[in-house]
Structures are given as C-alpha cells and as structure tokens.
Length: 136
Image (cartoon, rainbow, N blue to C red):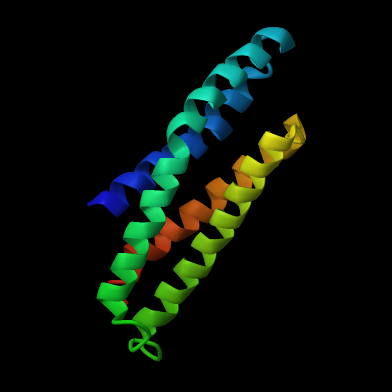
C-alpha cells in the first residue's frame, strides 16, 4: 500500500506540473507565474524526496517478495518487472539530475518543462506495466 500511495503522489505531482502549471503560462503574466512556480516547487521540494525514497525502498522490498531475489528471471512476469525496474531507475536518475540542477541554479524553464514531461511519460508507462503484468 505504501508503494502505491507514493506512486499516486509522484504521478499526481508530475501530472499537476505538466497539465496545470504549463497551462498557466498562457493566462498569467511571467512575474506572477514565476512566483507561483517558485511557491509550488518549494512545497514539492519539501516532501518529494521522502516520497521518492519511500517509493524506491518499498519497490525494492516488493521486488524481493515477488521475485525472490532474481529467481523469477525467465518467466514472462519477470520481463515486465525488470522493464518496470529499469524505467523506475531512469526516473530516479532524472529526478536526481533535476534536484542537482536546481541546487546548482541550472534548472531553467525549458529543462523544467521537459523533465516533468519525460518523468510523467515514464511513470504512466510504469503504471501501465504494473497494472498489466499480473494479467499476462
């Protein structure tokens, strides 16, 4: 349940940033939007690292439960699970890169927008795999 809850928060935050914050660019002036984005990102930065940490810790525990180490490799289920893990590691790499860029002051609007779009796409694919892998 923890893993699913963290996934909902993570995907929801990415979806909010892509579908809501990006849409505001056309309706709100640049200075007001910069203040809104700054406030939203400050709030997200306060809890998202904990969510991501719990997501990966619980995911690792679930992997060990479902796969018993790597003993499930070779079954159809394991191919979907390993693909899901690979995509999740990509998301983690992008997340760490974005946090690092933000800390270094190198997170510009273009990078911000593309980072969230890519993460949202990968997370949607992961959720799709998670939902379908038990039925194949």
